[in-house]
Length: 165
Image 1: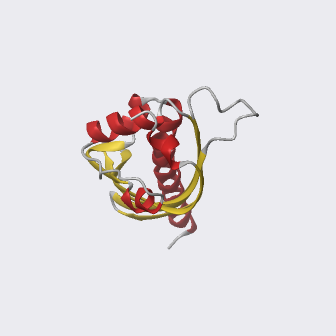
Image 2 (image 1 turned 45 degrees about the vertical axis):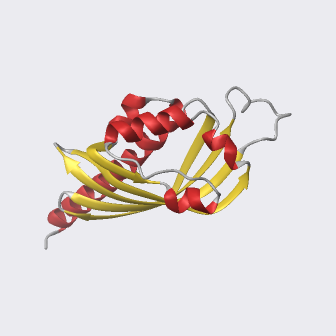
């Protein structure tokens, strides 16, 4: 293999990694900003989001969500009103043509609406979750087809997560 071919292959792999991680950032950004359009841009029409590995561990009964319209409506409706922030780290991707897998950690902090900036408030729900994601490239754009979220640790009040439901 020539150096030019190697650099081209490396560049394509880096671009895929960037675009795949950006897809997860569009998903979490949709949650943080209560932006249904942004979240929709990250999901296939038949997307499945399974929060049950995480929610079961913290005592909540939350269904598997599908398809995309249900995912967006349920999650933007429940999390969108909260003062929420997601930080995504440790992203690892594997690409096979137009399919990919992504594993990452997301630390999410949730406060009741309007209370996040108030330093006197201590009621919150903070989670460290592992995201396992299967994606597909559709018309040149990576989208999440299946997302499973498992909880690694939790602090706070889990009822905050369902206070807007």
